[in-house]
Length: 239
Length: 377
Image (cartoon, rainbow over all chains, first blue to last red; front, top):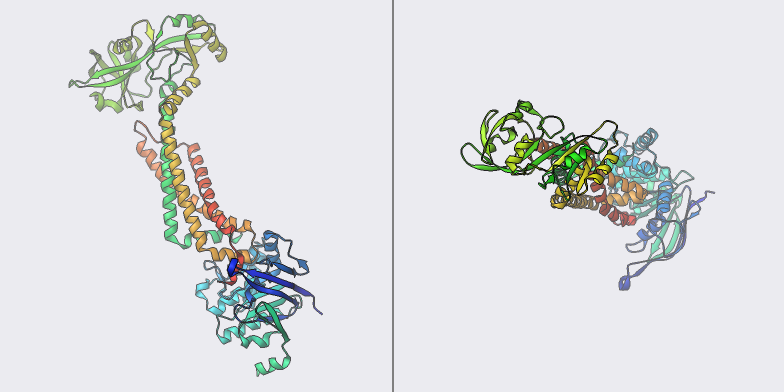
């Protein structure tokens, strides 16, 4: 049985102020085990992004606890949270958020650079991961010279190069066509095969269901349903 | 090497137009400061040029003398009292004052007469390029600087003019003895200087003192004060400081120069701050991404400060180049802009301080970034 790498308990969070204040999360609990690829699905405004921000230690909940790798984050200040993120959490964004003036290799290396890893080993690790996502030949290309699918692969490389325990992906296939989306999900599924790492993907896209170990449905700030994705579904999808 | 420098340079050079505008702003600002401070250095030097070129170790002068050009008079009999003080090897009178120089064609122009004994301790013209100092012993002989040939209607040695209705003949010509007041200096013998300036024979503007070998400067200075009574006895350094203080701060000239320099610093700071702020705003998404992937605040500040330093280096290089041209162009003027190595280093330090200080607004902006914005854009 794999260990729990990310655990959230009874999360409550409000957004906005005054009359516009809304309760975005109403007691959400969720855990990710190593080796899992979990999909978080729900309609717009259901609280997916708020939950992802809190799980990624980018936002502090009004109530409830978050533990990353067993470490409670509530008492940590902004710098300690940043340290936790760079060491334990990798992010993938729908709009990639690559640095337009840096080439693919430097974009990937940035995840190590912020850790203070500047040596040649960091460069080699970045090249290796770029090769893993199939972009070894485009390491010198600027983001504008890459297709959407390639840019998302660079973003994935940036998220995994630091060998973080948790990968949080926000609509990673949202801007991609079917084949590129499938390729990206294959990469994420491969990462989740590592029993020490877990991947949480926020998505609207039902085509990627077969890649998941588990699907969590969120509506109106509450988790309404969780289901394991059976082998049969994967086979149907592959057929 | 960390990617911070690369990020900073790419952010900066990415928008070339904005970068060029920043550099022009810094150059404008630093050239303004350079000219003001160069003028200050030049002015500081020019106001003490006579004191600097006198071999006197102590200056005896009337009480309240503000600067070298202050034409107060003291009794020359003090000279003999001074010579009686142990440790004084030589004490000679120096007479200064304004006079009217009549050009051969009849027009007049004011000149500043400097008269001292031609042998031994005195204030003689330096850098003589035509004629000889010894020739000043000839009756009516004077020395002038070639800078003022046109003003004085002279084109070389042995030419004549009138000083206070007395015929004078130029017997020596110097190069580079200019007055910041633009009134030409005319060097001559002390007795003739009295005649040209209307000074009575028993009076002098200063007594120049040279000490005996091994005499203690401070002890002799005190002994002279005690012995001479109603006069001031200053070392050359003290007289220099007093002259500078009068011209630079007593007249407000120094304050005006500093105000100009301060204006330059303010303009430069605002320009760089505005540029760094708008550059940071343009790259806010990237800074938020950096924060989201776990960069420390320090990492981001370093990127911004690198941007400021790069702006400073490029801007200073341009400003220093222009400053050198200005210094060369004014070198022969009455008030040259002087760029000393120390001033150059100080200006570089000022540029860096100004640019890094300007980064504060950008840093404040970054400090307020919500890293969670990466999910909403």
